[in-house]
Structure formats: C-alpha cells, structure tokens
Length: 429
Ligand SMILES: C[S@@+](CC[C@H](N)C(=O)[O-])C[C@H]1O[C@@H](n2cnc3c(N)ncnc32)[C@H](O)[C@@H]1O
Image (cartoon, rainbow, N blue to C red; front, side, top):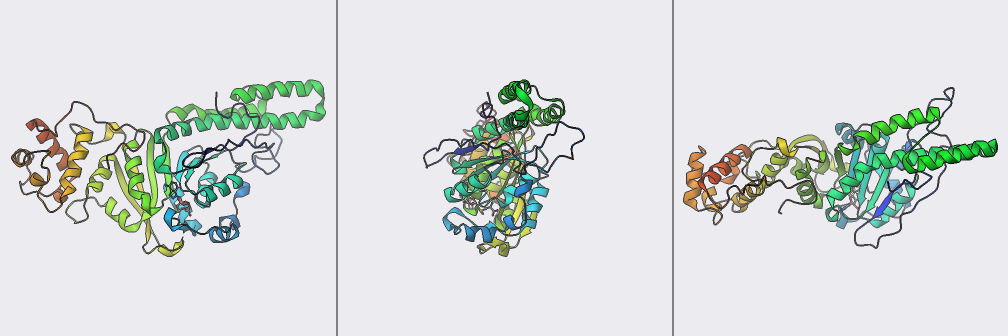
C-alpha cells in the first residue's frame, strides 16, 4: 500500500534524513489541494474549465523575489553550504525549458533553497523530490509547500542519500499522488454531500473509502479525469526515468556528478548550474589541452555533456567570484556505453594514467602494468609509445584497455561487465 493511501487528503510528503533526528511525518488535512477553494475535478460537465495546477496559487512574481524573502525570513546565505541564490527568474525558466520538463515528469532537485527553481519545476507540471541540507530553509519550504503534494521534500545531504532508494521512491510518487488526489476529491464530495442526506453521504463515504485505498471507484466526471491522470502518471511510472535539475552548490559539483553519471539506467539527464570554468572544461570534446582530465573521460563514458548557456555572476546572491553556466549531461544507459573489457578496470586505468600527468602512459600505469606491457599494447592499439594521458580520446583509452586485456595484464578483463549499477556513489573517487 502506498504511503499516502490511508490519508483522506492530499498531504505533501516530507522525509527528514541526515544528521538531525527524523521527525514524524506531518499529514496536514486540507479539503482542497489547490488552496484556491475550487476543486480540480468537477463532475458536472457544465462547470467552468478546470483551475490551474496545484501550485498555481503559489506562483506570483513577488514570491519569486529571493532577496526579499531571505531578508523577511532573516536568513543569511551560508557560504559553507554554497548558498549563492539565483535572483533572475528568467535564468531559472531557461533551465527548466532546456530540461524540457513536461507534466508528470519526475524531477530530482538538489538544494531547493528558497524554492525559486522548485516553483518553476512545479508550474511546468513536474513531480519534484527536492533534497535540502539547510534545515532552516527546509523548514521554510515545508511550511510554504505544505499543501502541494507534487513536492516531496527530503531534509538532508544529497551525498549521504541512498540514491537508488531515492529514485525508487520517486517512481512511486505518481501512484501515491493519484491515490491522494482521489482521496482528497472523495473528501470534498463527502463535505459537499453533508447536506444531501444519509443515503447520499453513505454512498460518498463508501466512495471515500475505496478512493483512499487505491484511487478506486469514482463518480463519472471525476472518474474520467482522475482515471486519465492516473493512467498517465502511474502506468509508465515503473519505467519512467528521472531528470535531475539543480542550481548546485559549487563545492559538491564533482561528487554529485560522480554519484549521478553512472545512473543512466534510472536517470535520463542531469541539468546543473555550476561554475562556468567547470562547465567549459567538462564539455570540451577533444584531448590535448592541459585541463583534459580523467573527469572528462569519465563524463564522456557515462554521458553526452552539452554546454547550455553562461550565467552572469551578478545574477546570484551573493555574487560569486566567477560566472556560472548551465550544463546538460544526457546520461547513457549501460547498453549504450562504449564497450570495454571491464567497466571498473577501465575507470581504474583512466584514473591511474592521469595520476602522474607529466609521465608518459607506460610509466604512469606502473605498478598496475609493466612499461613493456603497456608499450606493446600502445603499439597494438596504433598509438605512439610516448603517449601521455592528456593526448588520448575516450575511444583510444578503450582500444588501449582491450589491447592490455588481450595481453593478459592485471588490468585486463575480470569477466564481468563491470557495471556500477544505478544506486549510490559507485564510482571510486
Ligand atoms: C546555490 S544554492 C541554490 C538555491 C536555489 N535552488 C536557487 O537556485 O537559488 C545551493 C542550495 O543547496 C543547498 N545545499 C548545499 N549543500 C547541500 C547538500 N550536500 N545536499 C543538499 N543540499 C545542499 C544549500 O543549502 C542551498 O540551498
């Protein structure tokens, strides 16, 4: 049974994890998830068109004013948490547009902060799970979005989450939401039927019970709309991939990428706002530059990175020393990755080759492989024996790995596919 199935209303699910003690989940009653006083699924076909989505009422320019809201709440940006808040709504809108967010999309947001990006995601129709480490901000969000079941808030450190479990929970969200919405609709009907006599309320009560367990039988008009919604949201949920969207605290950029990049089986794409310099470096295609590093190879192995746009540093509060950038990483599912003898050994080989950048590869790979063995493999791969790591493309590294595997070195195939799976930080840092 879903976590919300027993509730007769549509509460927002808050999960508190991390160093602070887990607080009891708060189930807050509301007769109307939109907060507008209207219902979202009117059974009467002559009723006015359906009102805007649940977060519509939250959305206004003023509430998007990050600087004012921080001041009102007496919250100072914390440097230790990489808090550089985005002040420009058009930047947030642009990244949501670039991510192609559509109604029902499952989105993981890292560091929602004041909820400014979160709002854009919700208005685009996403079902958002947001992980915020700052408890002061998290509490604020919790209060503000209490009536918005489309948002699930996790208070904790993204790097300490079990990513696999988090993603699994996100897949259950549409079904839980549909059940909660149906239960809320039933609750409204129950209230409306209060004056309608015992027979009618008996019927509705029966309906409420059914709806609260599995979004079950409903009244005709509502049944159609809720049914459609449920079908759209719940049916493909088991297979639906997640998008990650974040104005990332710069200090966790690399760790977040190491966690997320290998999850192409579960995550479709990652859209990060990060330091411009990092964005430029990670999206360069060819080797040769002094800033071509193991991280470039790893990024290319797991994804197709795309530089989207630069973000002026003055658009952040406080303004950091350097400009930002929006970058997309389209994650490759395991079957679409470059074929290598063993994924784990391949990544070890790349890391080792870059560990002593001044050395040629055949010396840098010691003691993993003897220089003579590497020289022979380089020759077999059609590469000069004086090759340095920063000269090699991903494909050339793969060719070298195959040549070494055939030569029987310790870094060769271990017979496994080396898949790092889809949960947690499986990449060896
Ligand atoms: C750059 S701010 C972005 C805030 C907001 N999304 C915006 O665009 O203005 C980074 C946010 O990530 C939060 N944060 C920092 N470290 C985190 C971590 N390890 N896990 C989750 N959130 C974190 C900060 O508290 C802050 O709210």
